[in-house]
Image 1 (tube, rainbow, N blue to C red):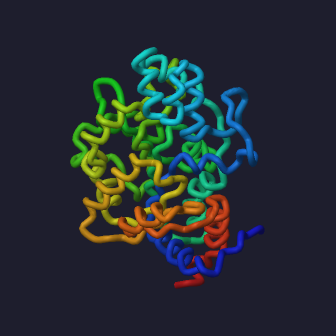
Image 2: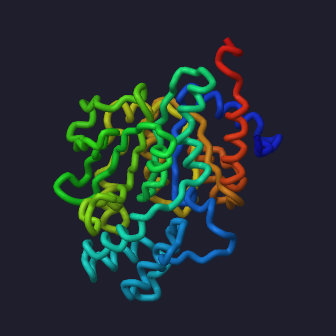
Length: 326
C-alpha cells in the first residue's frame, strides 16, 4: 500500500483530525479547487472534450467568449454571469452552464476518500459516523463518487430560482424530492442513517432538459438575494443546523478570493456558542490569507491539496481495528 508521508510538523494535526473524523465532528467544506487534481500541469481549460472541471476564472472566460462580454469584465465570474443573464436571459446562461456541468467528470482522490470513509469505518469495526459534507460546487462529482462506492446519501440543494427560491430541496436516496418549507421542524434527515451532501450554491440537474430545473447561485443578483436572505443555520433542517454549530470545519479548495465563503463562515461562526478549531488547506497563503483565516480561528495548512489528501488517506488507512483499541 502506498502511503503519502506525513510532514512531521503536521503529525499532531492529522492525529487530531482523524480522532475528530472518527467521532463525526468534522464538516468538510469543498470548493472549486478540489476538482483540479487530475488536470495536466500547465494545461488550459477548454469546453471541448475536457475531462476536468473549470475553475472560476476559466468559467468566467468561457462565458465571456461565448456571449461576447466586454473585455473589462472577463475576470469576474459574477459580473460576467450577470451580463449574460441581462443581455441573453437567464435561460441562455443556465443552458450553457448545464452543458458544461452535465458531463461525467472523474472523481478525484478527495471525492473518493469521503465516499469510502463509511465503508472504512465498517471494515475497521467502528460504529458508523456519517458525515455532513458542504460544497459550493454545482457539479455532481461528489455524488457520483458516493454512488460508485455503493454508499447511499441524502442530497440537500439550495434553490436559486423558481417559486421555492431561497429554500432547500431534500432529495432522498430513492429519488424522492421534498422542498423544506419549515427547516426547524423538518426531521426527515438523520446523520445516524447515512451521509448528507449539502450544496449551498445549488446544483446541476442531469434529468433537466436544457437546465430548466438547475439551480446556480452565480450572478450578482443571485448573490445579493442569497446573502440577504440566507442565514445558513436557519435555512437548513434542524438536524444539519445543529451539526454546523457543533463541529470543526475543514476547508478544501478555497481561497481568500471566494468572498462569498467569508460571509458564510462569518454567519456560521456567529451561530456557534462555543469555538471549534478549524483548518484550511491552501498552498502558499499570503499574509492577508493568514490574517483572514486566523481571525476566524482557522489554521492554514500550507501544502498542495493532493498531498494533504494523500497523507490523510494514509493515516486513516493505518487505523487499528476497533477491537484492538477496546
